[in-house]
Length: 433
Image (tube, rainbow, N blue to C red; front, side, top):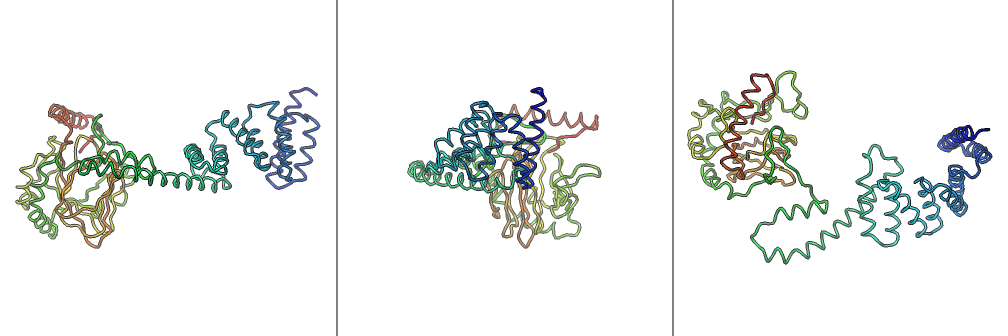
């Protein structure tokens, strides 16, 4: 019989052995293995199959001897080294187990199962820090949860717990070390370093700026801006009571002019906005829309109009500013999303805020407080919700990103204006603010 025919017959037998074992047919698997041994008793795949049978029979010493013969014949098969490591573990031979796993990882450094095994070896030796590093690598290489064999799930869960425990120990260590440094720099800013350390420890994540239309590179991706970057916030806050009174008055009217903030036309992809599309659960009473004043609404809110008239709003004719009373009904949640550009900042002046309202920008969450204005970068993923019993009302307006120069603003005004004009002519999508 030719060698190629022997190889083909051998592969068929080995596949049949695997199928018999998966069905729990031990006698059939043994019979087929005997046939394979007659064809190629020293083939590494046959030696491996014999070793697996020996392991199942509770004879790790015989399995180890067979696998050592197998890897001598062919040391480029990761599975042989993995099985040799298993035999060594059964024999309480951590050195042999570790060596075999190292050889398997040399052949496939991203094998999450082998990384888990190597981590377990180190953990049994009391090397928890080193084990945690391997567990972290295993988790990074592991497939999505639904694609992991059920018998491996407990090992992955253990890896997650180990990584978290190690991060907590490092966190405690760093906090103790950083406390005197923070005390020495009390009142100074270091929040971005804290965010980086938090991400390193897995306590939070860093959210990039990902606008849907235009991104200006090089601008800091900061969820909430510093107040001094918008020195006019205090002036706006001073008008809170008057603005809130006007908001209550117009929203109490049946002819208030409130419209759905989310308003996708028929046939357009709605995706995560299905629940809010064309719904007054999130409504807007516009004072300015797409860079044009809504004169009728401004006339109903003269004190608000006066306050707005003193502010340096984002000025992109045909696009911005947008200024409106944003009304979020009880039980309404705005899903995570990103704005169209990081060239602007969004300013909120909370007017009516029941309990259990929130805004999250990136990894930072805030509970709005009446009369306390703030500015944030909405090109970073953000979401909001009202879990209270009454409607939440916020005055929202567009401002320039404070890091842009006058020259950059001039270019952006023209770019947005002309892209909108071109898109209207070509019936293309417009990147409206």
